Image (cartoon, rainbow, N blue to C red):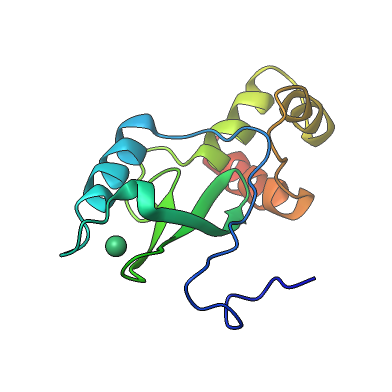
Length: 133
Ligand SMILES: [Zn+2]
């Protein structure tokens, strides 16, 4: 089954995303608007395909590539460098406030069809929050 774009340089095999994500809607939309005007050709956001997804807990980075000009960009669900309250911190803090733990958060996220954060990421956030309380 051919899957590599190196065999067919003009055709991009798009990566399929599934389920839901939690996004900072304002940040996410502004990135899409920027990408819509990325090229000198007649390409726009609609010529861009999803290449891959990187997940850091509940934060996702979606790598996009333009089929026409090969421009590539990573779109993040929140600003990785400048988020007031990162979603991982908010999720762990929120579940702690209602007296829950990792399993409760995992169950909640699963019900929403949101890929869960790992127990390692949960523990890291938990430790930071617990020392701040
Ligand atoms: Zn382009």
